[in-house]
Length: 334
Image 1 (cartoon, rainbow, N blue to C red):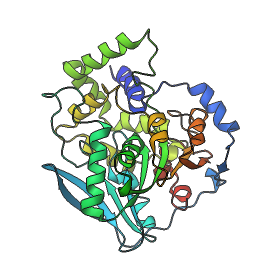
Image 2: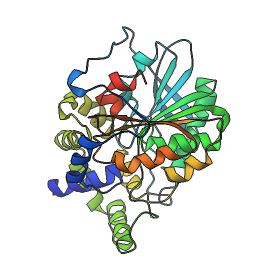
Image 3: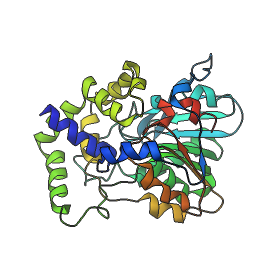
Image 4: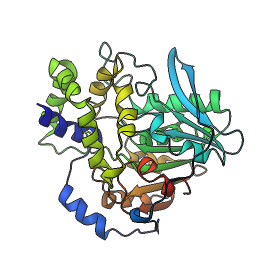
């Protein structure tokens, strides 16, 4: 069961099919079509850290407690948005450094981290945890807490929420930075017709039966989380016990299993290729992509750099799915 849960978790966590052998070959040959970060993993140095740690705060949104961290007193505002299963602490290596240039806020999306986790099981499927709701959360946060238009920087599925927020309310967003955004490979529009019925049956089974709870229990273990992260990162040595605890600890809170099971049944909603053409001209998009990402391969991502709304597509050699954590010395200057 543990092995099966681990394999299934990988598929759902990345929302995309795996093609490891091809991708590992590709990462060695990959070349950027526009701009490439030239730092090598072998020569990385640890980023300078601020002596003042970020402040942790809570905010009430539509009756729910939302947790966020913040740092910096002046300069442009930046809102950092995590990916599936992540939280504000996934930006812990970025907030203190970026705060030297501006006001930085890292937020826990509703259902994740230490934000409230309202039970989705008594409501229609995916009616709480969807990109439209998270976009509303981000725009409300910018209006009520940030108090001025912000740059929205997002990793993985957080990128879809960030794009949706900018499309819904351009006046709140000065620009969007996508870091290895999710391409949503299990979206209903991307599923081959032959497998659609089987995906739906599996998702319904996980969401509505004890199988799903057992599945989550196997996933929500330190060893499993560590193995999944080691697959996602270009350099497995950067997956530390501290990182595992940052991801796992809030995932063990009451309600986390229901959020997880509801989201892995989410095959609808917007796609990046639908949102990028809808981006208002005054809100530029910049994309950064780790070339060693086995979940969202850069060879699939390059086409997204061709949209008119994207000003630059920057490839990061040797880096996996979460560059902001794996290689902050590359991401923070960019």
